[in-house]
Image 1 (cartoon, rainbow, N blue to C red):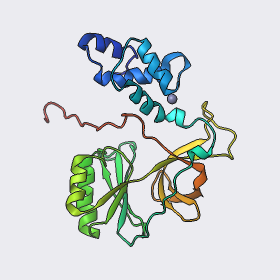
Image 2: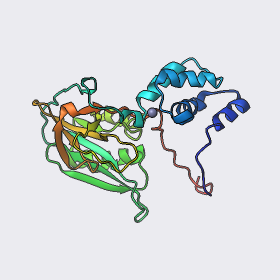
Image 3: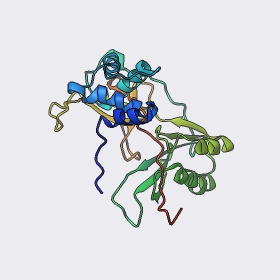
Image 4: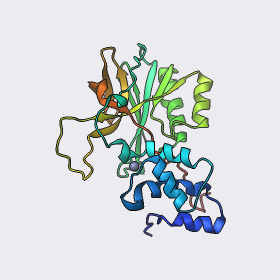
Length: 262
Ligand SMILES: [Zn+2]
């Protein structure tokens, strides 16, 4: 069955039926920010449009601000200004197997029932441990850490991940706390590309990425990780700005079992 994108008025219909907004708030906000009359309005105007539709909730203006700030398209607009500049914090020098970066790659076309590859890279030796997996959830991460990392290389001092929910949840934090591992979320940034003038996309954005920061050097050079996280490249830190993770789009993924399996 083909599942279409929920029409924007679904939120209003839901509101009329159940009389609550809670889950519908994001729908209102993104409709009023993106879809209404050309769109991508600033937060104040977005909130005003929600009010014009006849809806309101206590954190409306705050939510509108958060959503507009983290809108992917809006972040890629505009030019490089001093306002965008990243604060540069050098990273401490670490020893082998002290710090491990961890990330999912994929989804890829299915192979032997697997869609993802979970990769753990040692920051100093660049030693890569990888396992194929069916899901990109926290259970896979916990199993991987215990079986492939902790038992074989010892417990690292820190693990660096992106801010995804498979790395930011209670079981993951509990495991790390138990072993005394620090969890650092890698900063994700957008890179300003001043040299390219022709873009294939309609959106003529010079902001590329997001990329995860691998290392910050004292001379202002920042090393970014490629999407395959095993290679890095160096850029001038002045050409980066922090990337805001999309507003509540990063939800925990639920794996639904078939009734006969449950
Ligand atoms: Zn926008």
